[in-house]
Length: 414
Image 1: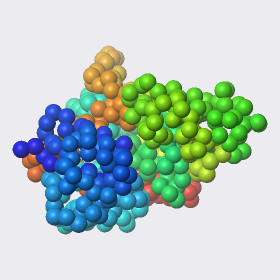
Image 2: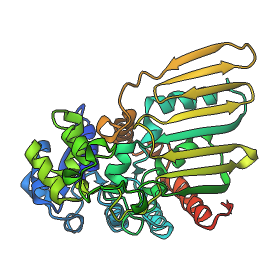
Image 3: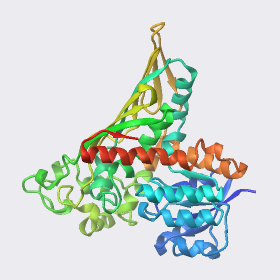
Image 4: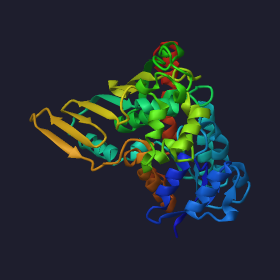
């Protein structure tokens, strides 16, 4: 029998996890909770969800006796803790989109509920589950690099992704979603802990909003791209970017689906005329940082530096690992290894050719996590996910410590 899955939140992430789950026939979607009627109906039609499995919100679904083996919780970030606790208490295996919750107290409440009920639990830290990450972990574990001394890691957010999600979009303000390091880069902090495999001890951080401010608004710029005199020369033109998504299946799915369901030039233009995604990037109410550096010290003196910046193409993360006997640098697809003992170089290919964006499946991570979750549910073994709820919490704790370090300009001990 295939694993039965309910989905709470039928937006982008809910759709992605559902599509990956049903691929190969190992799982089936039996219920969905989604407040948007059109989105709920479209999801039900795509996955064949029966009428008795349709709910207006997660609470309505949780009010019924358990109706699936597992639940995917892909509601908005601030609506994670209550459904996670409710579904854990009902005995569902849970796949929770990252971040776990906006605060440490809420996240610990989720961990306690998972532990109390003994349910399978995964968090959407999809970078752990890419072919590239598995290859890099195997190289480090093999001892080819000797003892790891330091790691350098870059997250190239992408200039247009920053504008879409974190200047115009739902994650533009800390008070409505959370700090950038939590809503976007908790992936990377979790990944560093996963790759290095040691307890972090101290953290420092610096970052700010340096470009997307009212002060940097070009002379003569309008408040909306559709009626702006300088729009043709602006790298953040919503008009150019979103109209350019038309005809591209992946880009119509994301990011264009966040802007409008009308995939025509007229529909896109209308959405940019009235909606948030048509606003000038220098005239919104955004306040999250557009660049940040985090410096970590681990047990034994191992160090790591992490840079998150908006001012790049949207590409795979770039990483360098410095070891006592060797060096490796990677680009999300391939690893170049230098052996200090022989001076020889070798390039290893992870065979990953999936793109870095959500529309491309995060380099195979979305599918990798979903398969691992289904295996955990099938076997009843948490180990299939490579970590548990407390493990997922560890990266979040570093994020909150780094934010304290950034805002107080201090070094925070963990």
